[in-house]
Length: 432
Ligand code: AMP
Ligand code: MG
Image (cartoon, rainbow, N blue to C red; front, side, top):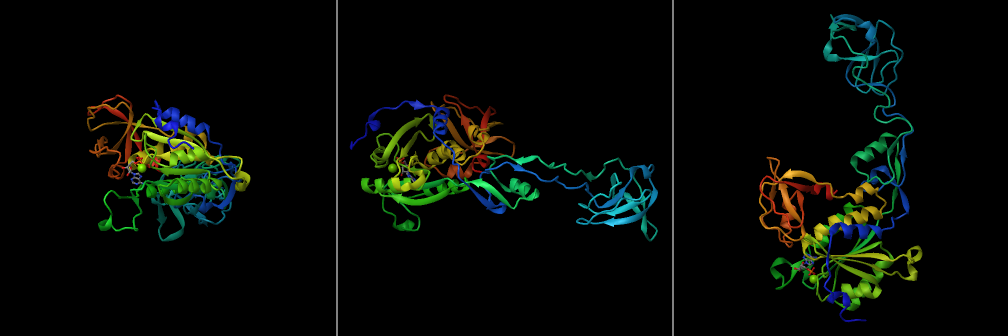
């Protein structure tokens, strides 16, 4: 095997982020295995079926207020007195409303057949101490305070499409049509490891005993959390030592039982590391210089599987190498790995084709020096609705990502003056 792979020597042109993303997405064949889960356990997973409602929601017309159900024709003027002919509480059935009477009714209770409006309690008065009749003090409109049967969901409607990423509200909706279980796509299986001889795991060495030149491994923690939030099953392989044989062994064994091997570190130009030649030896590797800041170096490749990998043996395992600088790792994950994993687990195209949906927000800062690369600046919204810039945009400064609530997507060569409208990407959307 070449000691120095040719790809390391060649000076690679910068590629546009959109081109790299399109290329990556073109390589994804979505997972087709599914599993059935209890609805309550399906948070963050991708729905593998269209959910069709077998009933109207709400199932019947019901009251939006505590008050009285009436026939509008019986209340032509304020002050009419109507005898109370029935009492309907939520969860109980109503009978036909006798003309010239009203029904005491509570929020969520079915509207009695024949009644066509609800008068809220506040618009009524008791008749003396008589609990059997009320003054109706406001003339109701037909349909007033009635929640129509099916106003949320009609019977036969598709409430959630195959490919929906499930979350709190969609799971509530699924439960609302009576679904206790849902079919979802299998989780992508991701093997995660960090490279770099300078890395130490927190907990292994206390801060005061850290040797010169060593740093704690922070990438492992946020990458793992990001992967898990995306619905992946993560095998955390920790730090793989800087040795050819161990790197080969780690890649080889991970490939058999994973859909993706994700690493951080060691993909910069000219770096003497073992990841690149090892991936090349076990499959193929493309190294990209992405025209973005932070996050220039990025590697994609495939690692062959053993015959022992069963049904998966014919397909190679995906490999992605992120840069080591924490902010570069974070941003390339959000902009490249995230859409890749969404497509891999069967999410609808809208979720991975247009992951960047910027808002136009005024900058409350100046960026007098333009970068030749498209830049993703760490910013935060202020109380005036403008954006403030984190003072240190260095790709090693993870503090910026904690402080920030979004990224400004700034085109190559563009300067920013206070008050300019810029493209703001809320992190809340990218971290979901
Ligand atoms: P590399 O991409 O390997 O050249 O690393 C670039 C920079 O990121 C170096 O300063 C590394 O020490 C740092 N780095 C690499 N991996 C990690 C990690 N897992 N956690 C924190 N910093 C890292
Ligand atoms: Mg390194």
